[in-house]
Image (cartoon, rainbow, N blue to C red; front, side, top):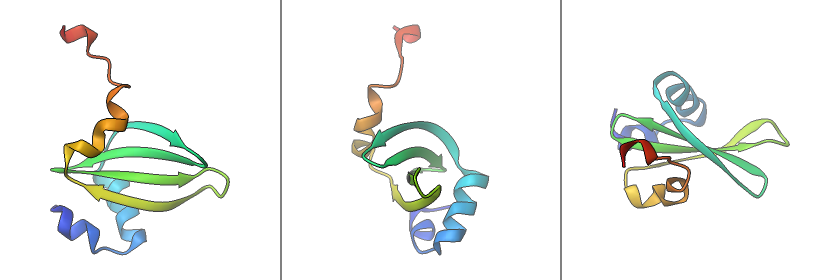
Length: 81
């Protein structure tokens, strides 16, 4: 799947695609959201999960690795050094 195809899907279809085809990578918290990071093929999807409402508020797809910066401090590379 290409990022362009994903971006033009309805929200419920995106949710299904992430849950069925996405590889969970990590998560982080901002304000009232738990952000879950997934990879689908050659792009990433941030899922903004509203914990108070117990629902997905937003999904952001991107392919630029610069958007991964907030997650990099969580990756332990000590075993490869």
